[in-house]
Length: 222
Image (tube, rainbow, N blue to C red; front, side, top):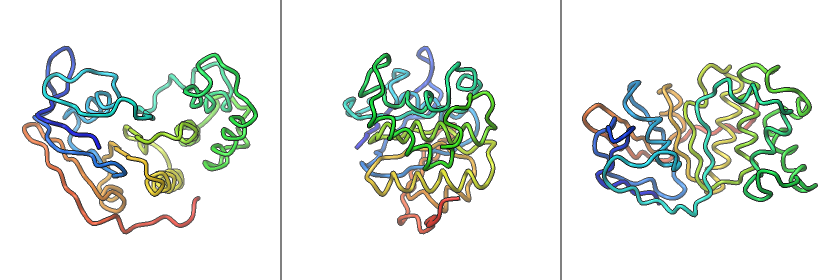
């Protein structure tokens, strides 16, 4: 469980969120919503340990295996590596940044690429992929981490409907396996259809909404 007690997050001591009090229960699936600039991405970065809290308490087991998917940028496309190598970076906890990827890990990478329908692009350069294809590859990298906490910042922005359906199905699968998910989203149809818990950030307050388990299930992957 992750607990927030009078937590404020921001940059260089300047808070960009109201006081946050509440919990992300272990195994929960939470949509983080709110207007642009309200601190959603900043909160995710703080949960990921990339930024210190401005004030208050964040009670999170740092032994948690955290997988972090930031907003897509040109950084990944500019890596001088293959798609396979980009996904294999998710294995760094087990083999280190400069360790060899053994046969078992190679199979894990290929299985993840198959799950996102990108196995045929293993030898391709990330710079040759479309936005949707690259997001599938980044999800594959997320999958090989086997993380207990997944933090995703606007993972569906600018990608096609088929890819969104595929990635939602994969997130549901990780949720059913017991992972805790916190996802920044803008599309309310997706939020209401798939996320049992919502944290809405405003300029002066934060509102938690816990609903019955999401009823929409994606039985088939595109």
